[in-house]
Image (cartoon, rainbow, N blue to C red):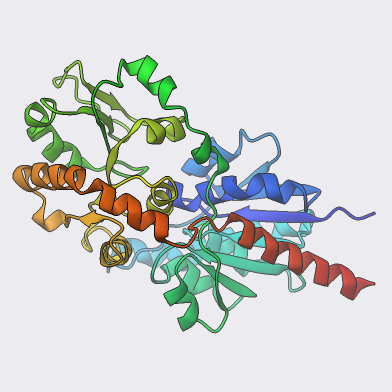
Length: 358
């Protein structure tokens, strides 16, 4: 009997990787084999290649750039190299389904998809990313975190975003014991999987004022620990693999506005101050995400262009004072966890294929 297989792809940031982790347990009940295609040297390798139920593969990829740059001249050649590598892999794997979370590694994989393979792409943000735009023609359906985007797309379907089950199992006691916390409120500050130099710098300007009232856990990003700030109640980490425990221990959170992170925090009813990536560093997707959360009373927002020490301090104090309002509003929002719905759609595709073969 032929094995039923799925290929997952996507990478570049944690937001393109973590939703796959949320789906793994469910996919194991549907598929005989789960494969993941990532980029050479991408962060997805460190996360997905160590998972016992995932067979990991690498292909050469090229980052897609919107800016006018001489580096763009080599993109078509490098992209077709990736497509060629992906085609060879997919011919060997012979998947029934490809599920893509976007990012530049997804483009050659989706473009190389066999004709009889079902392709689903998932868009986490309020608007389509470049990679997903390039893949949408080949997709059978575009699964969307936001209903507003799903309504705009012919192939769109609103699913929410897959959230890791581990986030619901966090132990605040573990973090309290490790860091000697629990007597005061805990503020978590994080700049996304790649960190944020600007947020790090401005936060450190107001540490003395904040530490009078709060304990602070600061996820700085790789290479951004600053040992000059050696305070007993200020805890710096480049990255935490147990972020679910850190979430559980935190009373309020200052964060970028990547869709995956803010929906995880919303599912946990954690009051948030969102500092979205500016358009100079992104396509503006985080600004759109933060506007949605703010307009629905789910978070406070501080734009990076307005980010100063005094405004960050005042915004954290305001968030703390109004946190119950945000908790109440998050409790009233529809369930943000799309794991079950995404799995249902994938299972339905497999079921239809099986019936057609019979």
